[in-house]
Length: 312
Image: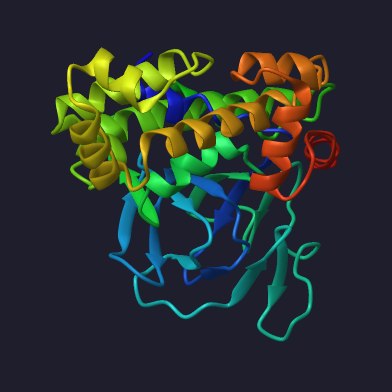
C-alpha cells in the first residue's frame, strides 16, 4: 500500500457542514470554530485566509484553501481587515456584540452572507468530526494550505457549487461524498508538490524507513516484530529502530499499535462491523485484547467510540 494512502483513506464525512457564502466588501469573519478540517473554494472575487500563526493566503477565483484545527484564523476581503462576525464552534455565527446573525445573514438553502448578491462567493465545507486515521492527516498539515487555479483545477468544485443549494432527499449524503472526494483530490495534489517537512517527505529521504512504512501500512494484521520488519527492509534491528524513531518520532511497534487502533476507530464507525471483526481486521488475536488496548489508548471502549460516532 502506498504510504500516502494511509493519510488519504481517513476522511469520511458524516453530516459535514457545507455552505455557499456570499459577501460584499468590506467584511471579515473571525473563525474560532476549530473544525478539524475546512475547505474554502473561491467561486468569484477574492478571499484572504489569515491564520493567527503562519503566512496569509490570498485566494482568487478557482483557488482553494484548507484549514485545520485547532488553529484560529480570519477569512476576509483584505489581509488587514478587522473582524465583524465571529464563527464559534458548531458554526454559531455571532456579531461582535454577541448576538446571533444567522437569521439576518441567511439568504436561502445553505446560502449565507452579508449581501444576497455580493461580488465575492466562496464555498465552505467543514468536517465537524474526523476518525483517528484522519488525525494523522491533521498532524501532517500546516495551519493553512492552498492550491492555485493556475496550476490545479477540479470539476468537483463546480459540482459542489450546484449541489450545495439543493434541498432534495439524501442531499446531505451527496454533499458528504463530494466533500470527501474534493478533500482527497486536494490533499493528493498538495502532498505531491509540497516541500513541507511532514512524515512522508522525511521518510522518502530514507529508503529503509519508507519500506518499513509500506510494510506496516500494507499488512497491519501481521505479527510484526522489530526483527521481522528489519529483515524485510534489509536493515539491522538497531539501524531500523534508530532511523525509524528519528524520522517518524516513535518506535516501529508503537507506530504499528497506533496505526492499528486508528484503522479500528474508522472501522467502528461502520454499524455492520462487529467489535470482533474489527479486532481481527487490525491484527488483534481476541476482541478482549483489542478492547483493552483501544480503551487504554483512546479513553473509551470500542462500543463507546461507536456510540459517540453515531451522534456526530
